[in-house]
Image (cartoon, rainbow, N blue to C red; front, side, top):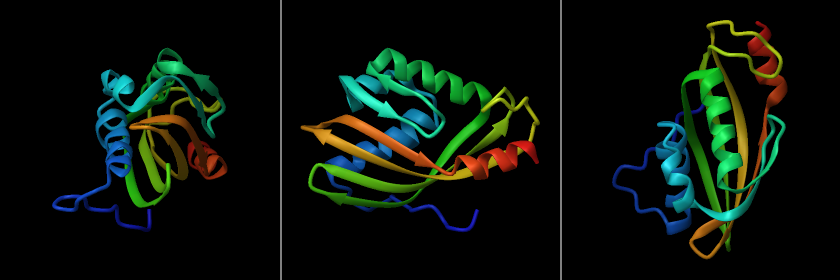
Length: 145
């Protein structure tokens, strides 16, 4: 885990970057699924490196449950964000304690981490589409030890 996370205290973020910050630091890190409707359009699309293509709030909430169930103390570190028009790109480091089956690997109890790059496409104030490309091979290597 080589890069320090960005610090946002006292730094004004654009509304789109603030939505991305809330998505990771408030929704994911706290598994607060009540924030999903405030972040996403009802029929948004999510494509993730861990496999699924999901549509809508309910399918995404199930994905949050799956990931946070498999990775205890799941958190994310925002390493960089770049905004261009209605898109925000970011570089992140995700991590947690492997306590449930993930990618076919039984729980190890180890701290695991991997890097990922999400691309948020906004329509108005909410996210219409989210693609996340993650280092799944690096994660698998850490899961298998």
